[in-house]
Image 1 (cartoon, rainbow, N blue to C red):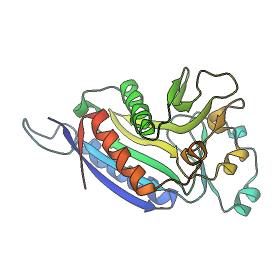
Image 2: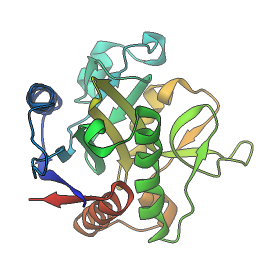
Image 3: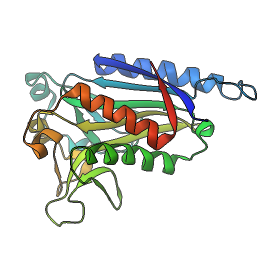
Image 4: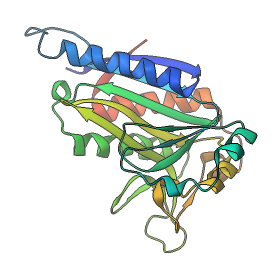
Length: 231
């Protein structure tokens, strides 16, 4: 039987505010682990969708040198910067990008962290198929890529960076939909200097309907993870 996951669309939200909310749900889920009884229909976590104002985030093992501009420049662009507790290097979040934060109990879903990341990628890959775009994986690099096997043409459309403690996850994915890609010029995205970034808008040549996109992502998430999203 599919596990229940509580879904929330937070709209446009400040990064720190969303991070604090993630931490609250993360700690609540950690505290509840092992307390459900046999046959319980307790929720196995939460899935948050959100867009952020312009912000750069650097993972705990990332290199600060991959931010190519100084604080004054960031302020001039209306962007902020956070050093955070997820894996991965530096990335950008901004309006027109769908950010997903699954706070999930992987034990309840009977999967490990490696399988979890694989399934996150698969959610996006399956969604892209509905737009006739073939997404894929790149060896040694998490996320979803287009042209992954073509030298000089590989470009990332979705970044993934997660944290897991006692099999409970937080942080997640950043899927470029109608994203202003010029903001990536100020970083080495995910630490790469030889690979590009792209968006669904750029690849399709038209502005995407975010409401439709979110619904398709929810459907893909339910199918790939075998869960039921509850509003």
